[in-house]
Image 1: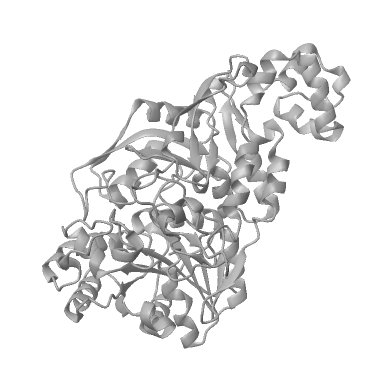
Image 2: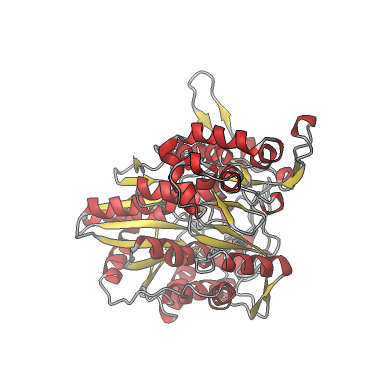
Length: 558
């Protein structure tokens, strides 16, 4: 019998720089890493691997004081990036147009070998098993995928931020024979292959999911998959080692799985199903597992429940929401934080009014968590400049608005014992009655998006722009309309506008496009101006990173 489990999330992030140092709570997983050991049950923590893009850009590695898992020690991104390039299909229309279909057919027979051609034949509705009996029309159907270049959705990826790759033109060399088209790069941690890695349950399941990934449509409107391209086997080979969770430990010796790293504001933002399952098995029936849900509860936690729990069958016993005095002050209208300048006094001096105004965001996130029928514990992550009155105010308001408990934590300064009271509260909450439920059923695409927008974000309604409306119709026709929804939106606000803090009201959520990650198993609407390739800030984190040539010590990571 598996043990107890908790999912850690937090309130809505800040756009202030640097986010980890000033305003945001420490990543929620750190609250569960070491405190349970002081209660003596077996414990495990799971969180996502940091990508280069975050570590070198704005957010840093997001592992609080832990730096050892940075710089691609673990390899999820370094495996998913080349795998995504292998699935690129630019050359398929090139060869299809310029080669004789009989020649292509013969080449494919040698490449696929006799035993492998039966599956493609059956998919095309060809009942024959002897290739020599095929008609010219059947050979043509087998040899040519008849891809419509205008429908290619598979993008190249890169694990560094580069805004100039958001829209590019490819195929301009004279050797490409006029196969010029507009394309783009996405960030590796938002790639479908990274999402497949996080959502897979076995090597066999990963092979199947990689094969299901849709890369384009044919001129008849039929989906073309990675299996159709014949690359799913190669993709599985590239990812075969990445599927294994990486075992690390905290300074106090608590075991940690660091596995997979899909972005939460673009992809589903959760560590792997495999890591959760293995950890729950290892801790036994009395043990405890804490798993991370990236960014705010409106994004990472919502996707944890509606996507990860839907596919894994896992049911957490408690939600831990992390909050800080500084973050609540920001949501209450506190002054802007500017990189390189001292923190405004409002964040380091007592201001109960700002805290109470900003509590609206935490209140909304408590409501969001309780929609899923799970008890909520608020972890108030204390800074040394916070006053007892401010910390007590957050705890009292949290309990008054539905939290099972709210506990002050000093784990940053004191290690596991600083979160002992939190661990005790989480244990009590996990044993309380709960009735887990998903937010929506898998029916109409537009209805699923509307439910998330209205119930989780607080929107009045949604607006499907023409491209999004067209895609919803296409995916429904192709049989993908029953997939869960993974919203790609800013993590800096409950709305689509990153400048709107607290709990925005009276807004219509604009959906400009919808894309499909069929292998991973979700549709992802693009909200507002959300980009799938982040840009670098004015002062990226990489300015602080350097190497000591004598000791080979890497300095400047945080």
